[in-house]
Length: 178
Image 1 (cartoon, helix red, strand yellow):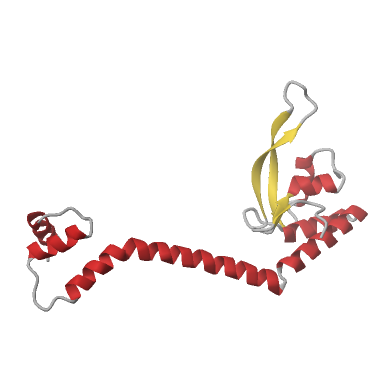
Image 2 (tube, helix red, strand yellow):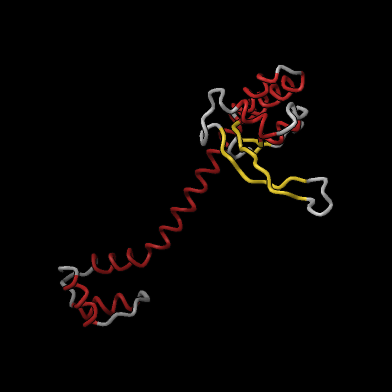
């Protein structure tokens, strides 16, 4: 699919300023155009959010300037295109519909699900590594055939890389109410 307007495919959003440029700058100022349409039932931080961006200017002393832009959802972009009632608006709306179809295809849904699952597996593997010393300690204590002296527990803990002696461990156990 030919990309008419750049889209953030992870969040299914686009730049309102890019859309405005594609539509042929329907108003002289971007802010005037966006302010006119943002009150058509759109909700800030749900349908759009304000972002700061750099734009190129014709000023040789300051070729780039800060400007206000809005990150808008593809759904909002489709509605803005319909409100334009122009050929460019219709073309952009059809483009956004195709982007949405591709996003919701079974293959893309499966791809996102696999990425999410792989991320979750990596997080859980990290947690397993983090908890490994605790598990080994618990296994040592659980496999003990008789009661353990605080001195023996301190030795087991020290073998796991935690520097603690018998008296400090005993103090900690008392502090914890054990």
